Image (cartoon, rainbow, N blue to C red; front, side):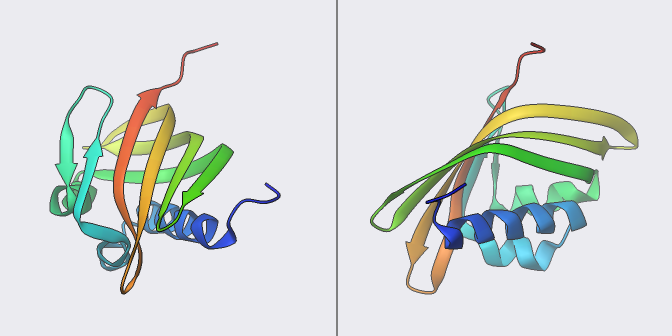
Length: 123
């Protein structure tokens, strides 16, 4: 991953770790107040809904690959492939997605403002 901005990679890794641990406090620090996730079926979750989903959803593992980070002044866009295993309301599930994250530099540091997911094909 030569040349990829280390600070954005560190933030993305911190986000994945907070997701893996269901760390609501850390997620609250990393997500912008106007954060919005767009899921694969078009559903949307704001900051509070994203954090609260950990009541019913928990990760067992997250593996990230094909990381590409582009930086534009105070904005960074991270794209990657991610494979994970998780539980949703007690049911085991595996996920294979391509995702985009948009990070914005605010006066108090970088915050994640958007995520969008698309399923990876089986091939």
